[in-house]
Image (cartoon, rainbow, N blue to C red; front, side, top):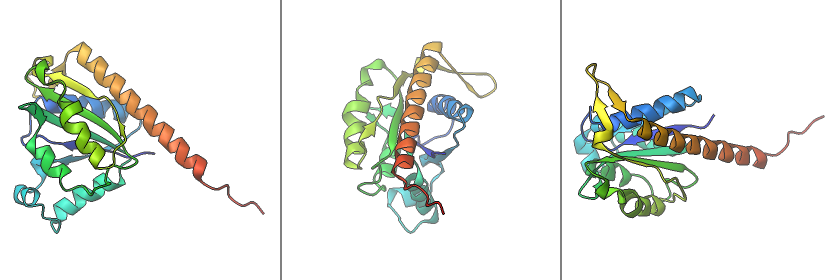
Length: 191
């Protein structure tokens, strides 16, 4: 089974971004995929900002990313770009760290005006990290995600449909890559 890592570039817990990421990871779980999470909010801030490669937490996060077959990059959009918290994680990833991985962006912003943040801010960085299979992803607007009285989130049906389509595309790519890897394995010798 392919492995998926979600890199959450939100510096705080409880943002509307987590409505998107929870919905996407639930969809993946229903399809039989486990998703490991690397969250900027849970990494030691000083180690992250100083790029402390000797930090056990940073080493564990990088190992999780390295062994993943797919990466979901989730971030709020500030001033037409992804968060600085996501950038600090991306800065730690080796030059070809996304090579051979399927990458799915999930972004949320205050208005539709920053829709192109995925194409113009994120995709060049992913490509510089060796990523060549970058899915179109989902850009959501804050108003499409509301908080429930029990602390969860409710997404508009249109947003759910868009996330479902993107996650389904991710699964198709993972299955295609797995079939290709299996095809390259030599046949076992039979006596």
